[in-house]
Image (cartoon, rainbow, N blue to C red; front, side, top):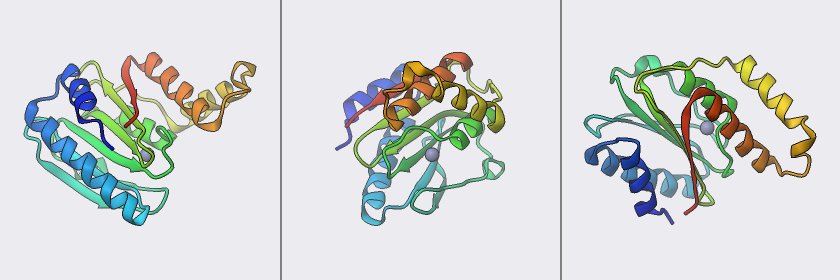
Length: 175
Ligand SMILES: [Zn+2]
């Protein structure tokens, strides 16, 4: 169900080490397995230098929260699952933008979708407030251009737009 080759290629292209990639792929597998079993969101944070898991946490069916203040590693990848298969939430985007130490954030859908955002410069935050993101989302959703698009499609357009503005890499892949 997880396209290891495609993901490995992407993670290599953004500069992650072999050690980190191995650990990340394991986490993908684990999150999907556990998520499909009980339908809950989980987060797993991996240190980009060592590939070590620095945080593991279980949330509810549509919510997982974690505190970046608990993370001492200076460069991490945040992996979490979205049972709904939807792309990043406003909270995901603002957390990613706020913390320079999050190099990469992944939302893994239960239906096989993968959404990955990564920063082009390590440790360079591009702060976006929740309000700013909400306004941007509202503007985009009320744009006639997107009238025919589904909820998920609109969300993907939105994330792409934000990624372009913030100069982040956005990767979208299926299983
Ligand atoms: Zn999320």
